[in-house]
Structures are given as structure tokens and as C-alpha cells.
Length: 495
Image (cartoon, rainbow, N blue to C red; front, top):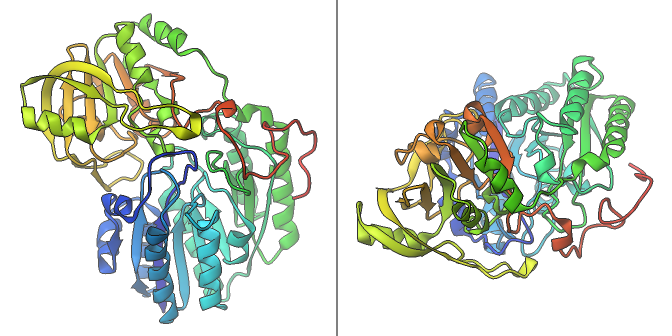
């Protein structure tokens, strides 16, 4: 048995000014051929689950590509074609099954539905070959995605710590179909709600209850798999928004019953999908009064993992202005500043314009660097291995990295965008965040994977950036209307 297995992932923020050329995927260590297996088999990611299942089935694994990039603006056509064409070329050579690890919120220069476009082409190339797909919890599910595969599933955790388990579930369904033991059918639906990422943590409501309902349906044997997708509201596309999908064994009615149940729950609690803001000055002042740390401060409006610049200084500046002490910041993207510090050398005192190198036309803001004086504490190549529960075993590339120590604040400055979901961003440069009073992160939910165990308190800082939770700052042009909360609507409409 020959199985084509591939990964093509990107969460596209259409408001982000950060470009997404092919080099951005290379920065994440895009791999090809047998190297895919060597790189991902030791991890806890979806591809590792696919590899394990294929080995158990004594299948030949064809692995054309595994490519992922940090969230940013629309993917260039060159990058998209490199990835999708390599998958299609492998499929065209003939296979018995196709296992794909996709994101579900990829937008390119030419298509709003990167995954649906790929799957339609794959289905055309292999009309009768079974296809399974794993998607991110933030997928914007589309008709093209559902129509052009046999089994589609998504993560049940945010932070995403169940990639291996979800890949195992859908992979087993696909292999059972191949053996003639199952006849998977899918039902899906959505509701007109733009759910904000900051409200999608699966330990919090409303998603805690939604995930519970999916697990109950699976445990009761109603369906083989049930998924709720929070969607990605920062992709201004027709199909953005929350949705759900179920897989049943030959019983479409059973699949539809669970979908309708999930849709009703989503709509009833639509108000809980919106984040309530607190003025930045007030939040920092409140943090200053907390004496026992670490206190996690989330600069969520410039969240790297949702397409933020990772160089907006607004929240950092306010923390400095209010004179908070013993602060670790991770990580700030500023390759120019890193090079200046490398030229100065460890131990040198420098005064440099830090951050603010990127304009944000979608929210009508210019980049504003902040002049900071400090000592160059550490210089590093920025490479380390994730040891926490999310992306375990993956080798991270932050590029040339420096630590600027102001006396009251230690800032990890990186050359490649990377969201701090693991303590390795600090430990790799000699900072132990467990012993800091404040830890300021360019993150919003994924930080929980690595930092929740050490956090005494957590606070969101409503700064500035293209991952804002303030819908009034975003000029939506393409999303279907009406949709809550952009419009005042009273009924969720058809499935």
C-alpha cells in the first residue's frame, strides 16, 4: 500500500503587513522526501501519527513535503504553488490513500481558500482515492474542503496539544475505509459568528462546553468524530467564522443530528465569543500591584501566532513607563537591532531604536520604535528544541537572537518570527521565566502550553496591532454578511 502524506499549513491574517514568501516556510524548516519522516516521527504532531499508522499497516510512505510558516499576510502564489504542486505530483504517480495535515485558514494571492483549492485539485487527480485531512481548531471550514475529502477532523485543544491524537483518529478512519470496515460520511454546518481568537481557549467558555459536547457524542457512539472550529476572524474572506463537522459510519442522519446540536450551542452563546477590553494604562497599573509572580502579561494585539508584526512597542513602553521591575519580554522581532547588538558584543551598553519597524496600513498605524538603553546580555543563534506539550520535539529557529538587559527588563530580540508557547524562548538564552516577577509575551492562548504551569496570575494587555480584538479597527470587505457581531442578527440561518 502506498500512502501520500504531506503537510501544508499557514494561518493567514489578511490584515497583517508581514509578507509570506516561500522563504518564510524555509525559515520554519520546510522538509522534503524522506527527511519529512526523520524530522517529524520523533514529535507529537499530526505527521507523527500518520507515520505510526502507516508503519503499523506496512505501507510505503510517500512524503513530498512538510511545510509550515508562522502566521502572517497572504501566501505568495510562488510559495503556494511550490507546496501544492509537490503534493499533486506525488498523487499523480499513484497511491492508495492520501493523508494531509492542513491548517484550514490559508489565503493566498489568488485564492481565499488555499486548502479547498488544493483538495479540489487532489480530488481531480485521484477521483477514487480516499483522503483524510486534519485541520487546526482555527480553520475557516469551506464547502470545497468538505466535498473533496473522505474524513476531515480538527483539534480539540487550544493550545494545540492533541495533534497526534487527532491525526490518529482520522487516520484510523481512513485505513478502516480502505479495508472496507467503515463507510465514513460527513455532515457540516456553520453559524454566522466571527469568534475572536482570545475567546477560543478550550479551558474556557464557550469552547469548554462545545468540546465537551463533541466528546460526549463520540463516547456515546453517535459519531466517529466530532469537531468544532473557532474559525479565524482575522482572515477577511467569505467563509470566515465558526463551524462544526461530524463523521459517522454510513449514517448521515446521525452525523446531521450532532451538527445541529453543536450549531444550536454555538448560536445560543454567541455573545461569549467577544472579548471585553480594559484600557492598557489600567491593566498595567493593576499588574504593578501584584507582588507574587510570575505574572503573565499578554500583548495579544501583537500576537505573533495570529500574524502580528511582533515588533509593536506600545505595551512594552507602558510597562516601562509605569516602572515595573524584573520583567522578561519574549520575543520581540527586530533583526536590525539584533545585528547592532552583535556588532557591539556581549557586555556592551547600547542605545538603540527597538521595534516599531513595521507600518500597519490596515489599522492606519505607523511603526514607532522606542529608544532603549541596555546591556547586551546574551547572543545566540536562536536554535532550540521544544520540550513542552505543544510541538514537542520540534526544532525552533528564531534566527540570530540577542538579550537586551535594561536593569529592570530583559528583552529577547529575535530575527525570525516565533510565538512564545514554550519556555525554551527564554531558557535557550539563559533566562528562567519561573523566577521573574513579570513575563510579557507576544501571545494570547498558546502561551498556556508552556507558561500556565508557572503562572501565578495572567493579564491581557490591550495594546496595538493587527491581531487586535477590537472589530471597530478592522475594515471587513469580503466576509459574508450579515454576521455577528458586525451585524445585528436574530437567527443563525440554515446549516
